Length: 181
Image (cartoon, rainbow, N blue to C red; front, side):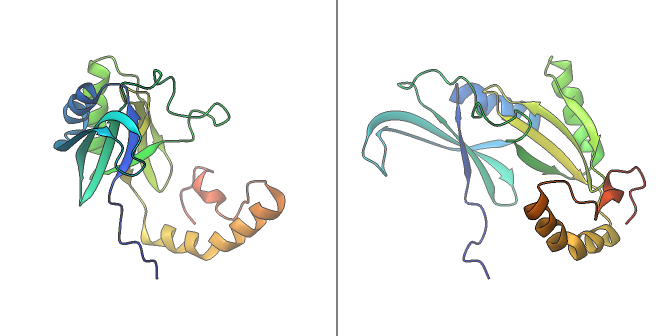
């Protein structure tokens, strides 16, 4: 059993703390719950002023951001060797309707939204926050049968991938249009 009991918070850098707080409230209805500002990094004692803001994701989960005014301008939230679609934060929503309402709000303000994308286990949309972080809203559509089928093949799939570095076909039903194990 893991010693970890959950995520305390996930933190990213942002370009502007105030803009970030306002954006997450407007489009994802996240409450701003805490601000911490220091002139020195508590862990390293480096003289480096920052604004650290915390947003309520719900369910006891916190999303946090650092604005770092003395550092060079933030160019990209991802490294150059990683495709832009890879690194993202996927946030769970209660329904496809809630996801589509968020999509409509963003698109009405000119924010580019990709999707909805049907992943069989969930439907999702993708978009970027004001700092360029890629986010996903996901609405679960997994059935108990799907979960059981995937659980049965997970190790076989992982072991085959480790040997071949090619996509195993154990769960092809997820992408062949049938959606049935």
